[in-house]
Image 1 (cartoon, rainbow, N blue to C red):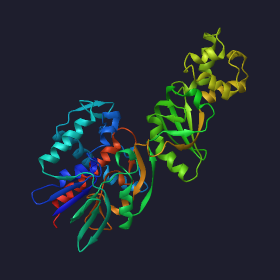
Image 2: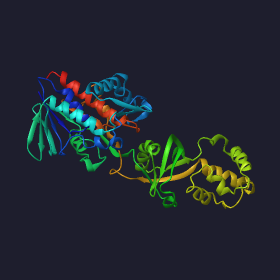
Image 3: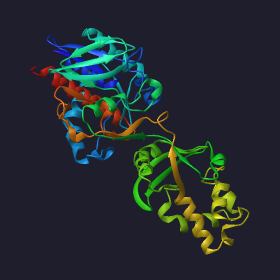
Image 4: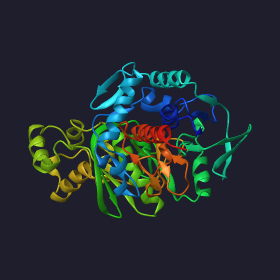
Length: 406
């Protein structure tokens, strides 16, 4: 049978490779002039393509109970095996997998070699405008010509990184076929704030813990390096909370991230400050804080706490000491928005998992239609988890199509 893959990203390419056999004709329709354009940007050009540590808690979906049906030990094992067979030698750092070359192009080149080796046809600069199903076949209208196929895989990606050609067109196609699409919103993205001192703290990096509060209720925490910017906050720890933040803002909820600048002494901050100030008794509170807090951050904390930096810690009232410690451990930053689709790594939301057979990625609503990759309502944290979703869904769709009896 003829199988058409719409989208030459990670899930589409893997689906094509695994669907091809002597009986199947496989065609990729790609709107760009090259495949895997977005892959080259991942991991700052190094491509963090996998992670050796997997937990269901690393993922989020509206259909939360469905996550365990796709993020399984078997699927993770098959993904690792696929890359071993592809000839990718991994460099593993803290569980993160990169190609040993530290180049995303290594993975891209290996995948393209396999496509060529299997004689899979690729039509570049081909944009799909409409798909219809008639008499058991799909008819695909593009800017160049019309195609037909017995099976179709939609792997067009989300709205993230529109500069790579992602425009969310797959969502529109799937809606026409009756699928429910949870509004895709920017995720793994920098967060914006109207905090008055963002210009002053721009460029600061610090190892922190960030706690997310939604409508004043604790939600989640992350440890890691935060980047304080002239628009708000960034860094992997922030990215990992952004999935929940962006959904909360969409639903008109108050989102506040509290930054703990001293997570290493949080539980003992008050007695520690007292002992530390006695050992450094000749230093005023500003110099005292500069001993363990970024110098640019100190005046901001003092202004927020309304404390004169020329004072000594011993001169502070009980209330002033408490306020200071609160700003060191629970510095509040109200989030007003994100840096949008142009800067996000993925989108949360997408096609409901409950509408898809998660063993084959075939639509429950339309026989012969398969959905993979970022179009799914399944998003993960930083660390290769989202690419792994693309690999898994592509493998499942491709293997199912290879074995399908028309």
